[in-house]
Picture (cartoon, rainbow, N blue to C red):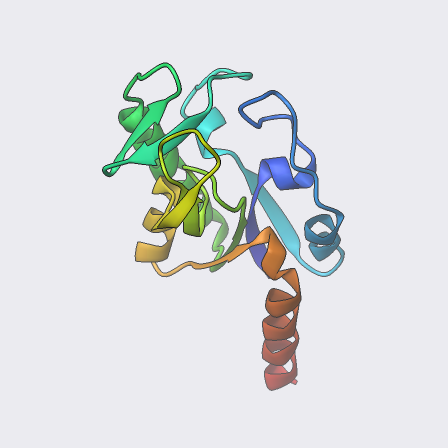
Length: 153
């Protein structure tokens, strides 16, 4: 199975700070599945490093107060295109990110507080039928993938 994955979780240094969010459990999915790395923010040609960004009132702002929503929408569209080209029906995305967060995102105040909501890319992928999992949900995803494998046997 082909799985779309936030590139930062695979160790790519595309995080806003210039680092990564390398996650060995996410990387281990590559033992059985083809992982398709994506970074919506990099795809939108946002610089690395870049000021942190959060969603407030449905718009994306960086901590300098600049509205960068259009860049995030561009990155989301490019990510959806990649998912469709590769036939990815599942995505493992970086939790709480203004692009990739699903279910919970930072609240837009840059204070570390979270609220219910989805990142721009995660929402677009979800709206197009792609199942979204965060990096803390790998056990759940593995169980689903095992169950699907057994149903094909």
